[in-house]
Length: 530
Image 1 (cartoon, rainbow, N blue to C red):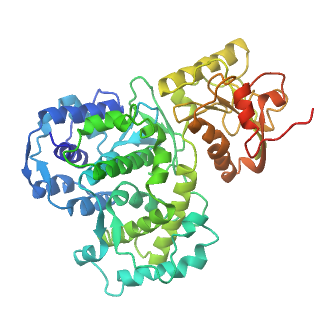
Image 2: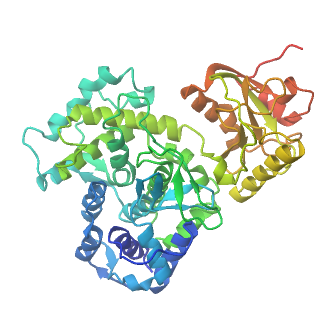
Image 3: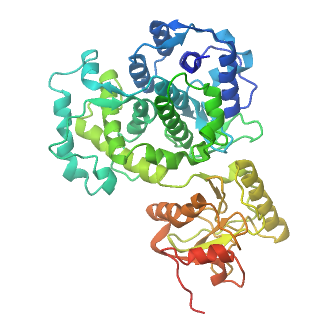
């Protein structure tokens, strides 16, 4: 079974959904993997037939967000594909694929998303489109030749567009981070003529469009918004925590990044490619090729290594330029100058790299099944000046999966509420060894973690007993670097914050001898005079 042929059928279902009854299957990644596995078992691969593939991908596909998918994927070199047979899937799986066919946000709910085994929510379409781009070898699409087949004004050539970048150097140098500032090349920089197909179709177009009318503000409304499933055992409805969320939700970013990472992986390995169901099962499980670092739990860390901010900003801009040519009637792109497109690309890159890639992945309370807060929480007066580090001691073993970490969170909340009679779990955040941070009382409510000092700092606890051993390096890096820098950027933690171990303020062995001795070497560690 050829992976590419199977994916063409799934993409055909995504872009040309058949009407039918709603699926009774839970909206989980395992169901998508099951659909791919069933196709891999039943679908026959035929010879090259790009025309049939083009018809599948373009049929009834009127969304402006899909024009980049059509243009960049369908102009790929010839390859083996299949004669589509939509009846190859069971009726339940056909209904499931139709249900997740289009990613959309309306009425406070997000559609086209599934729950992954690591607890994250993933948009299906950008994931599968990224896989297809990787199977094609993705590479680049030439903007100059593309321009020959679509409306182009003679006075609006790419040479003139390229001249936009030097003029923007001074305008954006203060607004951009040092890395993003590098996206504005000097006068000797080459005129851009290509767009990275993989990033363009998974991320660049949607992210750039989100920032077109909000590039002067710190963050557009609802960028990276999380949400809650109606139930975790058999999820069906996903409700966003911010009703004003843009299409670029956390689930979309997760799906786009997963598609880019796996597409990059597929483009690098020789044919025949592995079954896609096997690849996804590894990626959303123990790790691709047995590598625990290459799995969905660490998508942000791997995504940061996939491309630089300077490269991403250039590709965002080029994707917007191409989309403007492909969709001259697009309401957001009409009358937009190349400088405005470049400005949007620059700010979109800054926000994506700093607020998404540069921040830890935090599971909201609903994701781990938190019980309601008892009483009325007390708001914190932000920004705070302290970060207090704890270990949970019990549970003693580190949690390495979403299932075990979520169960630990529920157990600790039960102990704090029903045994100690606190209003809620005491910690602000809890750090698992699965790559995720778990929200306790969060950024805005006073916790119950460091008696006498709860209103002055955030209480962060590592799951485990660290008297004689240390947390994983990934977990340590989250508390030492990633979580504080993200909080500082958001105005939640002061840049000169002080880091203390629990034992420095309360009579306790917490956070354990081994961990405390390490804390003493960290930059913000502060000695407390007794």
